[in-house]
Length: 485
Image (cartoon, rainbow, N blue to C red; front, side, top):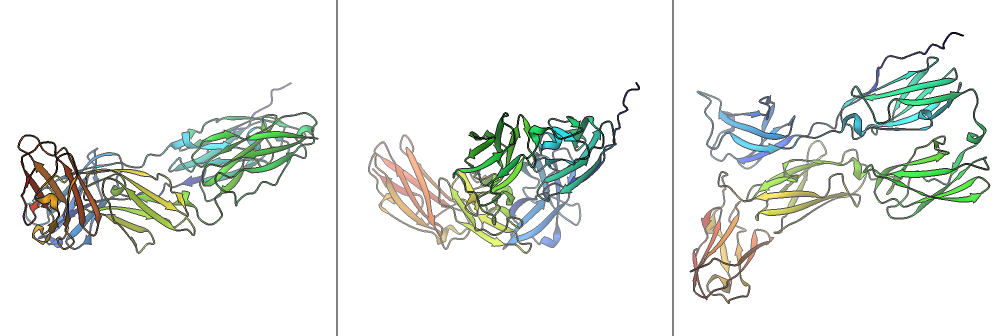
């Protein structure tokens, strides 16, 4: 007998996935006293490549240099005069560390379905490939076997594709799945195609499995019916974060099984149901947890204000909820001082969020949509002290202060006063206490809103102290104050 010839197919990209639109990075600075028509910008990436950049007005005499980073690392931003020798303005070039998006590639892809485990001659084999977290790239599939199999691909529009193929001869087939020219986990898959459906795989059914309307932390259940007196049913649930957990399976008798699980996350889940180790028809099943309208997992947030900032300078980020359906957007920030967040809608339907931190430290920004955290939320943000390189239009002479802590203090107890800078323009409040031997043990500054600050400090030794209160790097009226203990 002559050996059976195997037919191979050439890899072709069935569908190409673009990445999430490249998100810009914004660098905000003060150009008071300059004519924007006289200036130009240049941004150099860590590898020395010049990036396209734009300069736009983001407020009164405040401008933003916007560029799209290609890699993570320190970027160099030049602001120069257009004419003459193209001299840099004072402070230029500016250095800024930017984190570029990191994609998982083929390793982040997932493929599952009966068509990757078994097949029947002249019966369509089906499976699904998920590429949502893989980034940009082409999905290519090839099938090697005793006969050519026609492959069909349906892009579901959510980062996944349904794949079907029709084997016309029995035997062993090999299914190769590649993303961006690399094998995904599990590829190549070995599939045995039999002449007929095995009796134990006939009439496998799932009932009462709700595709939507399930709620987080509330138990869900469904049933599986088989026609076999023997055989094992197993089930697992893959959450949107990628965590896979076993579901509880109970035998009801007569080839029937009850399956229970409790979803812990909002969004699309995959339910794997296997009979004797093989996916049943339709498995894995896609279900939605948290309702059918809002899609928090489709909200994207980006911008330097979600990672770092500097005292006295506006920090910004953008929220894109265009593909998330209906739902309320909620923003909150927690940290060493109260921070007001301003949210405005851009012309393209995205939201621009700006906040102005007044105290350095670690902050947490939480972004919720339809009552659920969006991907990446909560964000940890480091606010650095002002380094003196940035200009401010604050007027310290417009500040007012009051409180016993400006002139006298009690040892070992909080001594307090308030500073009202609501009419003093943009700036940051700095408070320092110099003592005869040691400085203040502790100084706390809390922004209570509308540029009004509550300050308290504690002293450990008697003597005369010097209390310095500055706004926009200048003393407010009465400062430095002399405090006697």
